[in-house]
Image 1 (cartoon, rainbow, N blue to C red):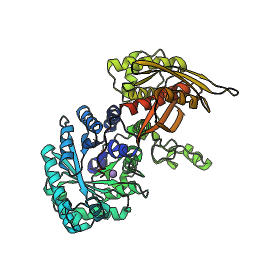
Image 2: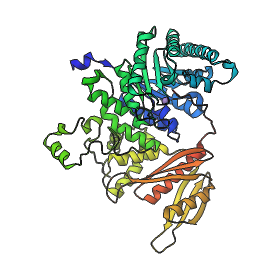
Image 3: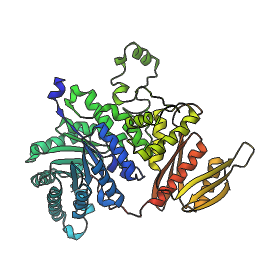
Image 4: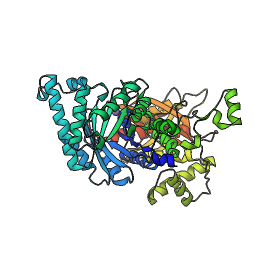
Length: 526
Ligand code: MN
């Protein structure tokens, strides 16, 4: 305990909802983002980067909702060093208790020469660099008028000219930046080099002692977590990352890996975080489910096999003494909680209680709906596990004001029959029916639904998995649909996999129907 009290705290900044979502190829609705944000608050991260308000009305709304609802962590919004972006952050965070505005600009010659080609930024590279510096300072000043907490990112700092970077960071600190983020945007640096960069800032930038240095690394060469840890060893006191390492290209640094490395090797790093590591596994599952990106079984810390031992020698050693082959315990990351089983005899109160513990606080009306679904499932499969409840909840969370609603479905299939599907859908206020044959029952079903809905969306991915074990298990289907460059994930869960498929497909079509035609502003990556 005294060791922990003596060690310095490293703040944890989660950007799953911004850098992670930006790259997942799918867009989350504000309700889904809020569910993830609630879980991040339970995980007890210090900062949640909720989005990029000026990029789309949906992002604005999500940041606003999260800023209003989430207590605990600071809520951060991203902007470029452009007044309209920064003002949008200020507006979106107006009702937030602990707002942070994250603004910044390219710092490397490659970025400055490439992104600011226009003559209005100056004709020569030297002129452009002067102009960019002014823009950085102006951005921080404006942001400070709207929030007390302002983080500045020097994009592509990993490849920036040192002297210029020092000048830029010193100038934004003088302008009021409270945190300075030194991103390795392109995942180019190696650990010692990145660590030396952080140390050089500490040694050369006037005023750096008044700010927190933040590290933001990408995994293009598989070194995001290692680079982050070297940053910490050299004085960074905020780490940025995403759950499951989701993010642009090869991804961001995986938060769960950073946190567990700092904790397991506290003897080496000598720092601590405030994260409740027992919430890591649940956070990982939730993000994987809602973004439709599965976690590989061999993934460090939270993969399904991360704690399973298979070689005979290892198993023997493990059984004699756990520490022989185990440096962390699965329960430390929340992997082996006692399983709670609900049945049809579980009352509304029992369900509500369990859902709250799983991170789904519901209104009375939402509870009614969830309870009806729960009873149907409990009736069919007797025992209902947490995983089943999460599948039901995700199903409900995804339920949007529906343009299309499944009313009836009939499948005719067998080893000697041509698979045939008949469906009846409510389409706005009318009822429409259709039938189709296909290569298999799911194919026939999707063709019939496509016919009724007149959709031009392409089915790009179809995945099915059993939520729990046994033949009566709930099947969860995830589909990815693409229409005119927009991608959405649809999902559906049922004890009947054909019905789950229909639900997932229709859910995807409803999402496409409700998407605003908003276009994202050019990427403001940090
Ligand atoms: Mn990034």
